[in-house]
Length: 272
Image 1: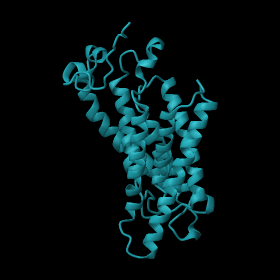
Image 2: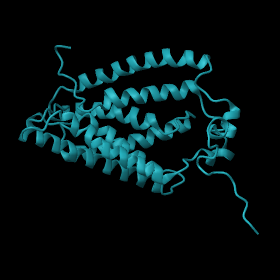
Image 3: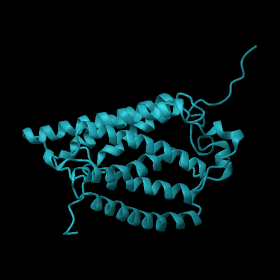
Image 4: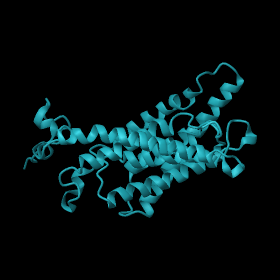
C-alpha cells in the first residue's frame, strides 16, 4: 500500500520459509499421521535413523545459508555492499548459535525426557537461521542474538504443541520454517533502528514497520493456504499422497527399491 513502508524480508523468512512451512502443516494435516505414529509401544520406531547424517545435513544447510543471506545483497563491488554482506554474515552466525544452544539446554534440562537431544539441537540451529533471514541486513548483532533466542523458544513450543495435537510433522518443518518464518518477518517490525542507516524501522525505535510485516504474514497464509488446499485435497481423494499400510509396515526400500536393504537395518543373529 502506498501509505505504508515497504516490506522488509531481505532473504526470505516469509516468501521462502513461511511459504514452505504453511505447505508443510497443511500437508501433514491432510495426509494424516503415519500408521502407529501415536502408539506408545511404537514410539521409538519413528526416531531418525542417523544422528551423524542429521548433523552433517545441518552443517551443509548452515554453510549454504552464507550464500543464501549474504548472497542476497546482490553485489559486493564497493565498501558499502561489502559491509552489508559482512553484517549479514555475522547475524547469520550469531542467531543460529544462540537458538541451537538454547534448544539444546531446554531439551536437556526442562523438556521431558530431559536428555541430550542432538536432533533438536540441529533444528534449533535451523530455527535461528530462519528467524534472522528476513532481518539479517537491518539488525545489529545483539538484536540477532535476541531474535535467535526467541526463535528457539518458539520452535520448542510449536514442536511440543504439534505433538500434543497429534499432528505428524515428520521433521518439524512447520515449527522451524512456518513459526520461525513468521517470527522472522514480524521481528523486522520490532527491531532495527532507523538511526543506524541500514534500513531498520522497528517500533522499539519509533518506526512504523510492524503493520506492513503483519500484512505480509496474513497475505502469505491466505495465498499458500488456499493454493495448497486446492492441490492437496484432490490428491488425497485420488489416493496419491499416502503409502499403504503394507508399504509402511515393510518399508518402501523392501517394496519398490533395489537393493532392498539400503540402510543395512536387517537383523543379524549373533553367532554362539
